[in-house]
Image (cartoon, rainbow, N blue to C red; front, side):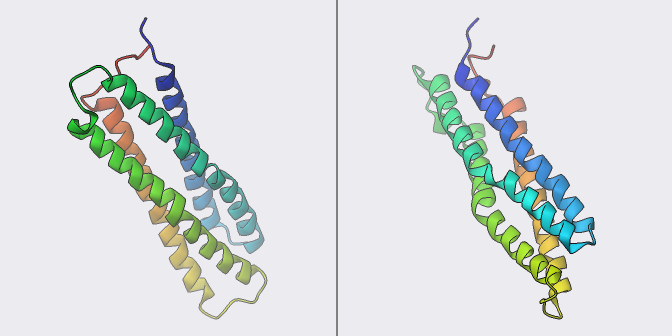
Length: 167
């Protein structure tokens, strides 16, 4: 049995990314459907907890991915950047990571500021329209993240390159 523990950790890291994204999607749908602004604040706080794991998940997935690339291509005549499926997968992951680490916090912060002002009854007259716009942006963000994650999964499972040390 030829196996790589880095590969196992990479699968765990992918599971952690999924375990961060899926609750975010579910909680976002609940937050949008909720009418009480106090409950929206609570749901937003829970979403923030899940979002705080994003950086650690990205770092773990990045480190284990580099280890997998090293294990796969060390001692071969093929360079990793010659494999188009792997380059596409890396680019998709980079977009996923940048989107999650830099775009999401601003979207969530803006939405929570609007919800807080509505809860405190200090909001402007067009705050409800701004909140609806923010809700659409956040929902679109989660849709993009899910599509990117599924594309990375598709390339991993059905792509031409298989990890040489799978158990």
